[in-house]
Image (cartoon, rainbow, N blue to C red; front, side, top):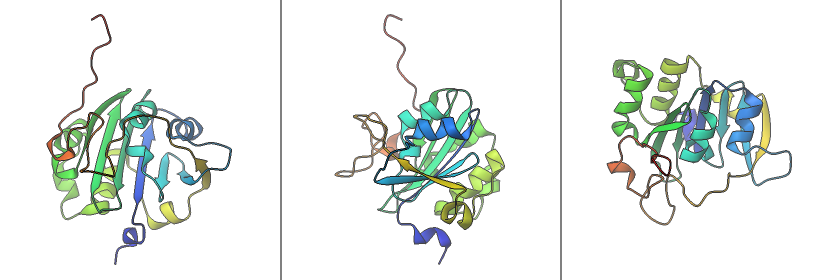
Length: 185
């Protein structure tokens, strides 16, 4: 059994362009008691009781001055990948539909050959950001902070029905996500 299977719900996020404290605030970290927690190890953030990092609105905040890559294995086993750069969500999709992310990151799909599930996400983070995600990264982060979800009426999936992106489209049909132009343009 892989160490990742010990976590029915697992979300890992890596960022560049902002510091750890700013990223903690962008994800929803707080100094007051909360029902969820966020593991912090440098620029790697882990959740074993939520998947805030893969939400489009969180990815936008995390990538305001750089990039943010997140993947989450949800309770039903579905793996969701999210990527944003410079405040724009590039895609929220399942790995088989994540070609646009690989292209934007300049990652050769061959670098991920043989990796499946969470290990595919781990291999992608290593190939794109040079970070090594290990069992210790998740089980023993440098610090743990309380986490309160960022308020929003939309989520990248809806627990009561099939997984959806932020626009409500089924994940299996989504491609690149482009925000609408500002009003008046």
